[in-house]
Structure formats: structure tokens, C-alpha cells
Length: 265
Figure 1 (tube, rainbow, N blue to C red):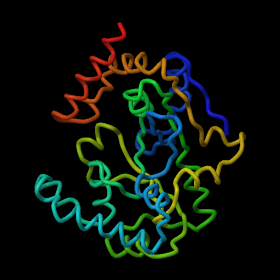
Figure 2 (cartoon, helix red, strand yellow):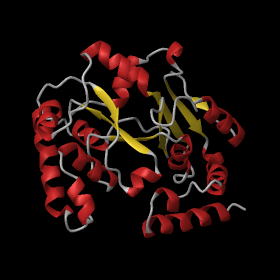
Figure 3 (spheres, rainbow, N blue to C red):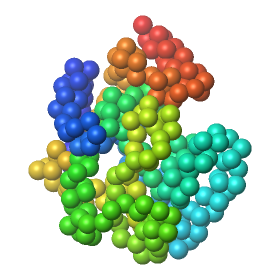
Figure 4 (tube, rainbow, N blue to C red):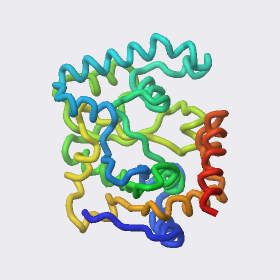
């Protein structure tokens, strides 16, 4: 369906109020910001596999290799508490994802302002975008297609659910029980598909493929000319790299953002 262009900050805040529904614990909507509006809702690992025509069987083999390699060295960098709480495969995927390793996961946030930050904080010559999905509607559609199943609660069930060949393209939105500081700061959770080659964007598009479904799935475009204006507004709300990425790396990015804004004044 046609994207909606957000030409100014006031329009954006009105849109934010429109999607501020549901209770605090169980969010109705998930948001994802892209610095380039042409980017799709495809996890990095899936894009790598598709670009290289990798079969499903080979994809699962490579995914397992990536996990093994990451786990073999992660103890050198994670705190003892983080390491002890990361026990099952999906938990390890979340750690990999948040440290830049390609996984089948796709990050989302329950904060439209956090999504806006990721849409406008870089690529200043390219339009950014915010993707919006109504997660409860997706859950309902998945139940219609595949039956009512709960998210696996232990490693054996996780292997049966996510590590089997020819798994259905069932998409689930969920959060890690033991969250990192970054996950908390970004109000983050993720979507995950049972099939290793499942393209999250394609799955959602097939569920909501006409204009009557626009309240359940849409893309907002933030023009390149508005990016620094949005970044300045977000900074006044303390939505910055230093707040979203706790630690010195976030502080360094926040200083860069300050200069990015200052050079246009």
C-alpha cells in the first residue's frame, strides 16, 4: 500500500498520538525505523542467504555455524550476569542481534519516537521511514493459519520450533525475558519466523495487502530535508544515542549527533 509522507514534526506527533493505543504492558503496535526508506523488513541473515541463493538446509547449517562461533568468544565480552542469563538459542540470537551479528531476528520498538530516531539519525541525503505493524492482528492471523501455539519455553522446544527443516512461515513478535540495558532503553522486542528463510516483510504484506488494512500495516516516509529537524526535536526529548545506547559508544554517537544538528544552524 502507498506510504504516508510526514512533512513536518507536528504531523508526526499527531500520528504518534493516533497510534498510542493499548495498555503499557501489552503494546498494540510495533515500530521500526529505517534510515533509508527503500530498505525492506528483511532480517540481515535472510538477505545474505537470498542474495547467494542458499537453500534452506544450507541456511540452517550456516546459522548454526554463526551461533557456535559467536558463543565460543562471547564469554570474553559479556558480563558474568549476562552470560549466565543467556541459555537458549533464541536468547543467544538476541545477543548476537544487538551486537551486530546477522540473525533471523528483526528488531522493533514499542516507542514511535525511538523508531523515529533510527529513521533520521543518519543518511541525511536519503528519505527515512518508520514501519508500523499492529502485532495483535498479526498474532490473530497466525492463529488462523497455523493454530494457537505458545512461544517455546525451553531449549528442546525451541529446537523443535525453529531448527526444523520445512518449518511454516509463522511470524511471532516477542521479547526477551531478561533484557539488556540497551533493550530496556530502546523499549525493544523482535519478530522471529519459524522458517529460517522467512522474509518478515513479505509475510506481513501478504496478511495485509489492501488499503482497508492500512491501520494494521503501513510505512511513514520522513523526507531527507526533515531529518535534522526531527533529530533536534528528539534531542530535546532526550531521545539520543546516549539514551538509546547506554555507555561510551552511545555518548560518542550523541556528540556526533550534536554536531550534525549544529552544522545546519
